[in-house]
Amino acid sequence: MASHQAKRGEGIVAGRRIGIDDIEPLLEGLAILGTGGGGNPEWGRAILANDLARGRELWLVSPGDIPDDALVVSGGLMGSVKTLESMSIEDLVARWETEFELLAATSLMEDYLSRKVEYVVPFEAGGLNTPVVLSLAARLGIKAVDGDGLGRSAPETHMSSFLGHGISLTPMSLVDTHGNAIVVSDQVAPTFADEIGRWMVTRGGGMGANNHYPMTGKQLKASVIPGTSSMALALGRTVMAARQSGRDPLLAARDALGGADLFRGEVTSVRGEDRGGFYLTEVVLAGNGPHAGREARMVIKNETMALWIDGRLRAVFPDLVCMLDPATGAGLMSVDLAAGKGVALLGTACHARLRHAATTPAGRSAFGGARYGCPHLAYAPIEQLGPEGCGCPRSGG
Image 1: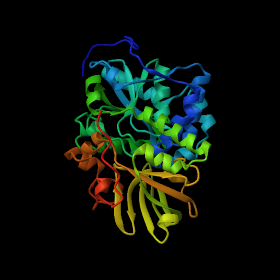
Image 2: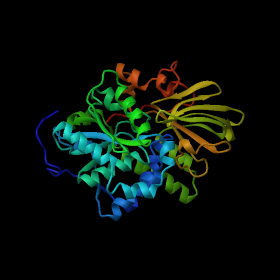
Image 3: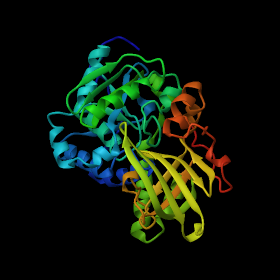
Image 4: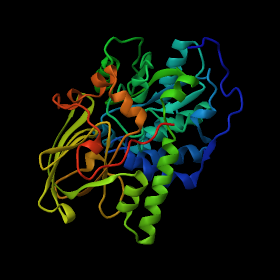
């Protein structure tokens, strides 16, 4: 990492400005890519609306436009989706005007590195964790990267393309809602820093914020899942247009994702618990329509991690199992699943960079089934797990 002290906002880099008309389609797409997690888009809506109302500018920049020697950090909120759902959106957004944990975590990272952060990149694609990084960038007067570490959401900070491309998760700065602050300077096991963070937030109000994966612009360009926010915008617009025109929004979402219909049914049972900073769930669905008489079972750790249909493994993390409302095509949150709720499951391959990361030695440890209660599971591409197929992995970029 270069050691020079850069001035915030130094240099002119082109980008795309996010306006009021972009918020709904962006959140619509992020909710689908969130695979059940990534934060409720209602939170993202409140955050972005507050920023725009206060005159802050929300900017996205393509990874390719970032200087090779720029300092980029990733980050976001940390905590159980169940904990977040128990909080007041209005109260939290108001408090963030004076006490914003993510801003505090960034300041802590800058102090540790003795250098100003020049760009921020979302850790994941989700209805809260993407908007909150856009908000961070706006408050810092810098741009957020149009991309992220996953192209979907994931429950743990070591589950990212960055780790699989040799970028260290540490140093990781952490600040919880009580104001406790630490820096995990290094780790031996790839899961250690995240486990420290979960220990901290479960004792610090159930939520916190972090910065991690400090990297150069050159490293970012070789490891980021590019264009995630642009993809979410396009996906959201496609689904919204289908809904408004009377076309099937599920088909629109499937085609936009380049994915497959995995299952349509109704939730028959949900066994869940808030444990160690996660919402762990096993969900069973009874099929209807084209899947009548069949049964699906999902393991969820905030996000969908594995899917079995009639006892046969059909998809496993990091490939995507997107949960949608059958009538509207809107992305569903895992905490909203309850007996009797209709669910449509769409599957698609993760980006090629994330697939590569999952198969590295570090990735096998960080992504493996033991992380979500299925130690016997190893990653297998979604197109190899069922006759329907989901096409090829999304191409690198």
